[in-house]
Length: 266
Ligand code: BGC
Image (cartoon, rainbow, N blue to C red; front, side, top):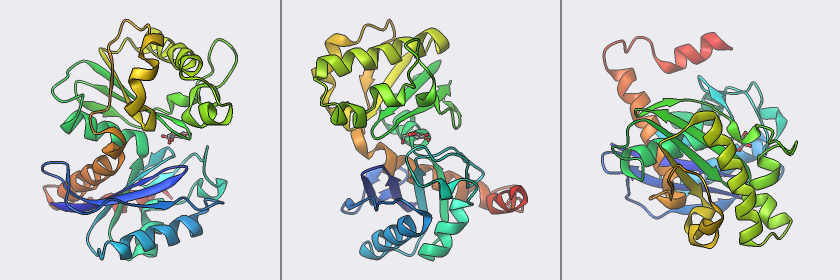
């Protein structure tokens, strides 16, 4: 199945058409700068532009930087608070004129890594941490996702919220050296390790390409590896998520369509 996978990030909105059976990009990857303020209207307009530039009218999967419960945004750490409570899947379907499925950005990046990347065939507990404007997390147990973990918002033993201490945005804003930022990320990963005892930690987002620069700082017992799909994991995973939703909607129990669940939840 081919699906337009879109990753909505704090600095850029990226999209490509993905073949869901292989996770491969079958179109050019297009990127548009995230509008500021990142309101539902402005993001909707940007998504429409991305869809038009791809000449696309088929299904869309979107990885979105918020907890998403049955298509509804529940948090808004790095986006406009107007998103809270908004049925984003329905809203973006109307804006783009396409069938849209939405899930948390880190969760979908995790799905892509578990299916086609560094987590392939890994059993036990796998934690994916995406490092960008925020710190996103996806937690898997024997390949099953526990959605919307939001573990970038925990407070560390120094009293600081992890996302405000060890994200890529903080590294940029405070112009931290890789070593100093690596120590901060390590503090966070050790905290995660002590809470969840994962078998593997996968790092995604822009910094995953630079792991060699801060690897000496990482002292977890758990192996830490970069995402194999690097920062394409979000787009690929968004398409996989939408593909799964569409499959379950047309299979047995198809009368219980996800959009019906979304409506009853409003
Ligand atoms: C949000 C998460 C998101 C992460 C990465 C956090 O601020 O709360 O939902 O996954 O940023 O974008």
